Amino acid sequence: MDDIARTLMSLQDLDQVLARQKHQYISISKELDLQGGISIMKEKVEKARLMELESKVEIAKIESEVSSLESKSSELEEKLYSGIITNIRELTAIETEYARVKQSLEELKKKIDSARSKIDEISNRYETMNQNLVQKKDAWEKVKGNLVQEKSVLGKKYNKRLKERNVFAESIPEDFMRDYIRLFRSNRGVAIVRVTKGICQGCLVKLPIGDLEKMKFADSPVLCNSGRHFLTE
Ligand SMILES: [Zn+2]
Image 1 (cartoon, rainbow, N blue to C red):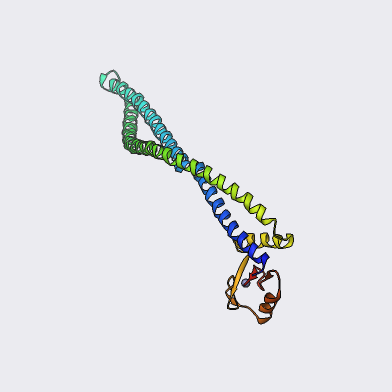
Image 2: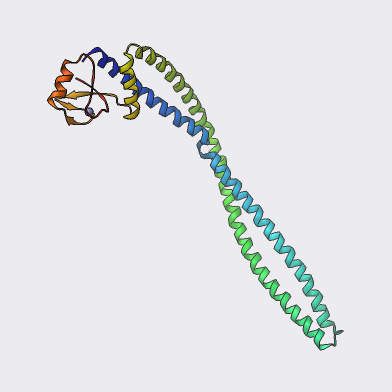
């Protein structure tokens, strides 16, 4: 293996570690942003609270309709049974209205029953969600502390290693470095591979004799036919 290949191999090892650390750092940051799912949970709890409130308002509205219809109903009853109305047409009109009021009252009572059973369900759900949130917050506080610590350690390690890597990379000729960076990025962290028994370990394909010869006599890494990586013994 020539010097450039050896250096590129070491650089690749370093860069793969750096890429893993970066990935880890980003996923910790994301987890911290999401607060372990607490912000989403908070939104849901708030939604449930608003639903409960709306249902309460709805019930209060129906209750007030019921009470005004009830007073209307007793007013009509009084008229009907007081015996003061002798006019048949007026009596019929009052009876019709009374029947209508009674029917509306029946309907409203059904509506209120269903709204009440619904609000019980909503209130229970809200309460359960709220309890879960409180528990989750406690658990999260502990996890969060560890994550913040881990993130900071990881960040420091990453920066230190990156500095070392950059110093190391300076020893590689510029044109090789340019190709290396391009290949590393486009081939998921693999820019240089070994050739074992004439087989490219990147492509897992047997290389033509010509390519093997070229490799043998070159004093720096050559590109694989696939164009995806440098080759080295
Ligand atoms: Zn190949």
